[in-house]
Image (cartoon, rainbow, N blue to C red):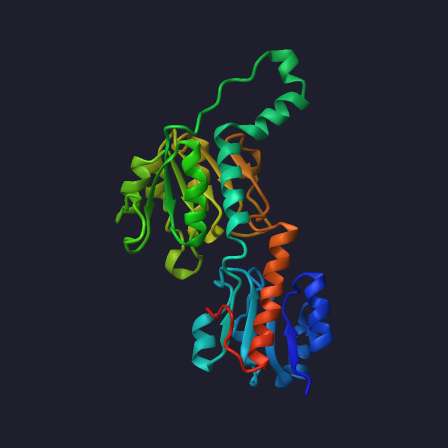
Length: 312
């Protein structure tokens, strides 16, 4: 019997084709009237397909009395109401590991672009400044600097491994000290921010980490410090970050994520000491294909009665 699957947000085309061939898909993402659509199909739905941005709210899941599993194309599932899902016994899957390398590559790219001012360098050539003004002002070397990683999980470790050959010293802050790494651990994030040259956030979003990069942390990083965020916009106090960058209390920032995506504050857009990216940490053809396939494979495991590949 063909199962009914609700598409809250689509995954890649190749995997959507696989889903269409296997299940009866109901496209909430295309519905003109979401309430009417859910009222019509809700009783039939056994699975949800979604993304880390779209998630699955308690409101949507609450209209699906037969929902058994949510397949989310992301590592972070802060947009999925996990407490509600657990209260109903709804399984939630995500797509870890397959995106580690690309996110780590993006993090290092942002870090290098910020410290070596690569975006400004590009503009300096294009707008004729090199001819009109001569050599561009000197930038800052990575070698000999200290990188503080906020969140030393699988992606954090991939970043650390990339950072070491650049001559960066690695330290980290997590809720608990890891026994399997030799990097120095800070129990106090403010103290770590005070001691490092670069603070890089790579930890889950959600209520527990909301604005963990606080005004105090930002100001402890200081006027020569650099903040890199490849986590979630919610982990940083964005107004405090903007104020510190504008006043010189913080030196620079490189941001792939924002509080109200895709809307980015004009103040950040206008700043020359900020490098911006449109949440592209894992956005390569290869990685998004692997993430999408993992969603498909998790659903296949569920409907075949096998253990889920990557349950949250």
